[in-house]
Image (cartoon, chains in turn orange, yellow):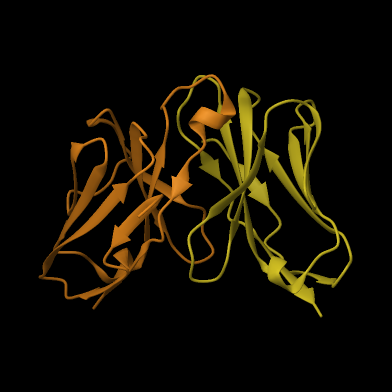
Length: 118
Length: 111
């Protein structure tokens, strides 16, 4: 498999459930990102990891908990979510985090997980 | 707050015509500019990036950057129905690793 993969592709969960989203990149990149995309709104950056270390937590509620065990894998653990958390959750990766050339900082996205919180 | 503004559309163009999409940004320190295409229900895919003033062509797509006026545009020549999608503009400052995205412009190409 190539590129950035995400599982599951669709998820329906109740507000008391605990679930996890998984992202895997096969590009040899060192930086990985979680984004939230709600209808008609710009992509919202949630978390950034560089060489497995978290470098950004964009004021995300604690009901979202990221985990990055290595440079190829990224998880987003979900618990006690709210209906307004329903959205498309996108994982992305890039070669480097602060690269001087646009090619190295280009982000490649996975297919996303469509989440519905009931 | 770094803002990236796009006309939400929808922009409707006939097949074979040129679609012109505009994007303005507020941060004068922005150095890298990206255009992504997103089909309905799918994830964004990179079309092209540009970081020098002027034009950059890739197939039917041309990106135009004007840093003095703080805008970047995307032209789609010979538009095809398969170009119907939402186009996202993203901007990054040299000193920052974060991309700031616009909300996107929806393009519909009429056959």
